[in-house]
Amino acid sequence: MRGGEHAVSAPPIEAHAGRLGAGRRLSVLQLDAHGDLNTPETSPSGNDWGMPLRMLLDGGAVEPADVVLWGARNLDPPEVEFIAATGIHDDPGALRQAVTDCSESPPHGGRLGVTPVRPGE
Image (cartoon, rainbow, N blue to C red; front, side, top):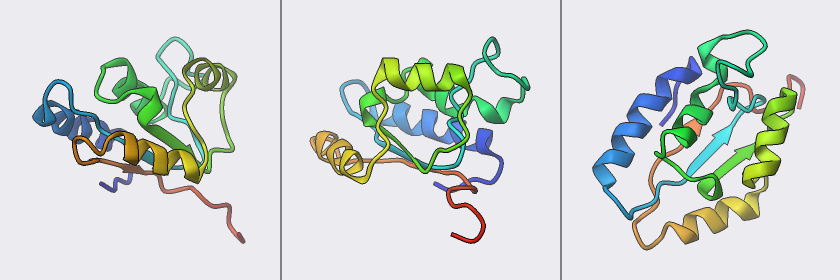
């Protein structure tokens, strides 16, 4: 799935996870400069677009082990702490592993941020 404003991707991923049913896993690749792992309590700005990945995780639509946050470079301190505490991955090998781990139920889903690469890279 692709989305412009990041919060638009949370409801379809939640719906897809619901359709998969209990016991089936959903892997998510987020290519983004930002973590989108804030909560209303931790967000410096309070903007919803800084929270969709965290909403998916907290809501149980996806497990941290099945998330790859690739390209993040602008993380708030609470996001860094959350990543460390949950073991969210940030490398291509982790993506392969997440897809492999979800292979019992074909891997589904994804989320694409619009800022994965710095201008000029």
